Image (cartoon, rainbow, N blue to C red):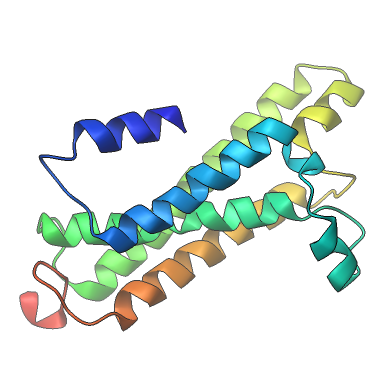
Length: 167
């Protein structure tokens, strides 16, 4: 997360994202800071678990969803820099970029996990006994991306925003 903040600070004068982008990006940074403090499986999230009758702490799913919110910034960057000018192509690119990063991250997690004992691997992964944890994490990332793109699409137009008339 420190790397993301450093990149955003050092590039601020060259490219300033919208306030909405910064807000959505800050959600990920906040949630991952919280998860790093407690570990994702131990974040005090019992009220959600109790409210919905879950058997596990779903904080990691919420954090993965927040990864997908970066799709908003990806679409904004691509459109304002005119790297992609057709709206639906920019939307798909952002969603696929998030899904690609999510899958690469889960593969790296798996590689690291097989290097350690089963007990250490389970503690590292924080899967809480869910054999489909990696797939659900990637789904959460993707759903976050779809929501971010929908937010972008529903906002009123601003300068540099992709529209179908731009091509």
